[in-house]
Length: 485
Ligand SMILES: Cc1ncc(COP(=O)(O)O)c(C=O)c1O
Image 1 (cartoon, rainbow, N blue to C red):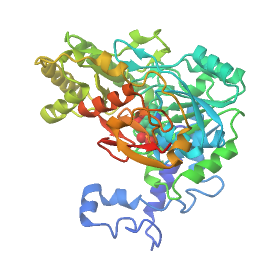
Image 2: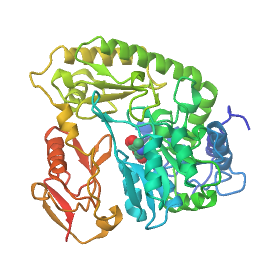
Image 3: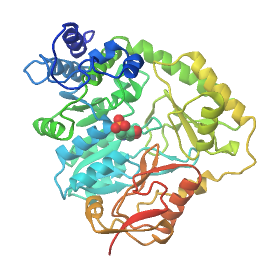
Image 4: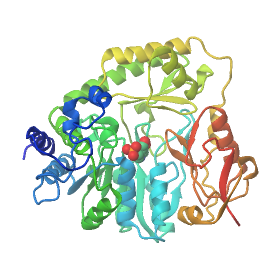
């Protein structure tokens, strides 16, 4: 099989070529029963490819098109086995945790982890030991974790069953995966890497090395995030014998829909082919555009960008130049303000904003004019700074960068009997729910943690500053679920 073929995509197109009286899902029957508005919007061709996943030789038979496509992806990423995931990297994290840990097991992970990892712990009854996040005083962001931190925690907690890190972070910052893998393996436990933001790493020499090449045992690659695959597409890779491959297969089938979208799977297959055959050229252009934009943005005295100068600071060994993160706090506007002004006044849409930063993804889909529009808009905003003096340092430091007291495991607290109290009255109570600012989806509070005055103040300030909080039953977070003690 060649990396320039896309067997799943090809089989899907071939299936749809043959006219059939079809009696299977989805109910629109290859578009024939679709609403005319939908047909007009997405086109008959796309609808004809939206078929049930088990047809013909697509899946579920030896040597199926899916098997062959996943083998090609495994080869491209240097994995022993790869699964296409139809429920995003969220599913990948859930599969990794569930395949490796049993209820009551302990996992070592960083505190600035993604909420999908915390929800996997909640569902699986797994206890976290956290590596505290260290805040970078300039960017106001927490970056990587170090092998020394992992080693020290593994020595202190011999019960740890696996290490799970996020690398790169949302902002493109990579930890020393090789050093962390060595530490984990010295203690006989696997390293699982949430590499949702690094699916392009294997395909360009100027990008950070990808997790499997650094010795990780499992890695999740978010195919929809920075490759051309459709939304919700992701991949899970496994190598070596510290993880039971057969169990991963079973857990994946358990947690994934029994009707994963064929279009979505085909888009992963083609995205892999695109990267394997043209990735270096396409990514060279993306890197060049991002670097040029970064240099232009920095010409403005009130704007600064994350870049490779970060390498060597706490936990940081590599940086993805295609992640364009701009610190706007000196303009007197928050990242949330700037994101809104870019959207409302300049027709520019960001990947995300936090209190101090806005973040743009730069991919093979961009042209120089897109980047020029973004940079010009940023300069126009920064040319009219707000009179406010914003204290990002104080704002962020009040937050989660000390691990709160964990009174119960996330799962125990989530399932415990609970009551709803006003957030202002919740200091000292054990949270029964997760509250994460979104994006980036890093939990401020995890179920089972005792709410401190600093945490409550931070959550209140986040809501007031325009941050979106996800997780709690009350989206405005006037009230929070706490454990009845
Ligand atoms: C680090 C990280 N992991 C996992 C996810 C979940 O990915 P998905 O949205 O594909 O489920 C995200 C989403 O932003 C993320 O930032």
